Length: 147
Image (cartoon, rainbow, N blue to C red; front, side, top):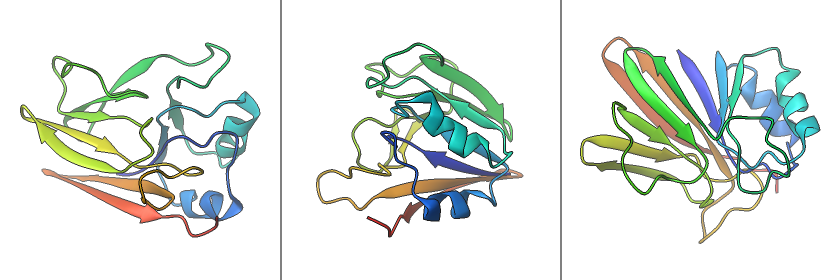
């Protein structure tokens, strides 16, 4: 399964990103979409989208966090990395910092795809591919060369 993971679009979805997302089986957005019309652009691809609420949303249309199971792994999606490792999860995916992350803490893998529109600390604008296969999981940060 090939999942596109994005975060922190802040009302901007570059056309180049939409073209790249077309090959995803699912899209996970880790918050700070901002306006619901921005998410509608992503949903127009016809690919299942899962989204969580960010700290820059003015509404509460989406959940604060989500728990999903794919490929035998338990995922926790949230915008801001939790202070404690959530129970019964294998992978935590978060946004907010605008900096890519791939780190294991207490046996749980923490992943952040970076930021689409406002990268931070010298990190390029980026998203990630999460590829799940039998007994394997691959995470690859992808630069978005449009800004």
